[in-house]
Length: 351
Image (tube, rainbow, N blue to C red; front, side, top):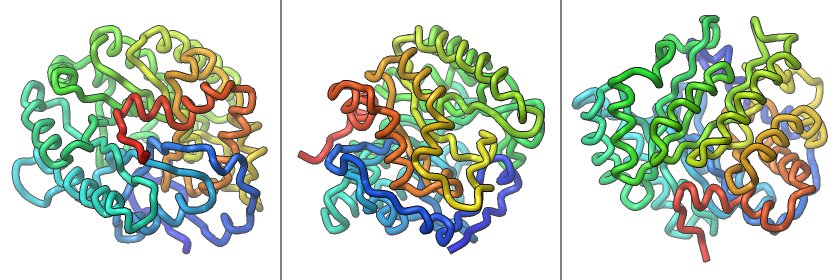
């Protein structure tokens, strides 16, 4: 099925999923027994794009040993009424129900949505504590933290008019008052932004050393619009920021999320879907820089599905990750594919 998102900012992020195109690339599954925790995926039911439990399972059950997953907020199933700041709790209620379905064992041994990352608008300051407590009640023992996306760029093509954040939000006094509510409740923060903003995460992590933070999508290196054709220059700036951020012991990084249009790799424009070797060639500098800077114990591979599904299939993605990790020790491979995610999100894995 071909899906074409209609959101105003879809041009920078989302790509249409062409299943017939993806199906033209078949690969043997590498190391099929290796346990994997996918620490970053979404669920939604949009007018032209449904990705719920069954669609997730269609991807998960393609050969790799996915033992658990973590859901990341995507503004799905917010409550239709009630106080505005409480409406995102509806997403946690929805996902916890999906997780309960999976935990029944009726949909296979893997535990979908074993961890839940919701959303709180931290600009409400100290009132964020009440919303976090509501998420904890709604998510039971699965709610682990929040993501408040702060991605901003001077080019309007990278800003979502339906959810536009101001420049420099992570330094805002009220926002930081809200952020300060996380650690006392034992909750984590997923940071989503673009590569020119990575230094803002470093400043945040230094100001809140007791709060666990994970950088999404290797820090969002941009490669389209005004950033096109400048990959070497951008990589130099990105890598310097990554190394500085890695000096903060309370920060981990997710290795993935590089299949969006904004990254500028252009996989979606290939006549045939990319092979895992093609992905490895494009991504190796980014993955190796992160692992060298953070160490495998603070790195976790992530799928970012279904967002990245417009560029490659789920089994090909995980094959690429396994090829990228070929030089790692057994312990490092465990961390990269399951250990770091399980520790960061405090997951109760099957067995």
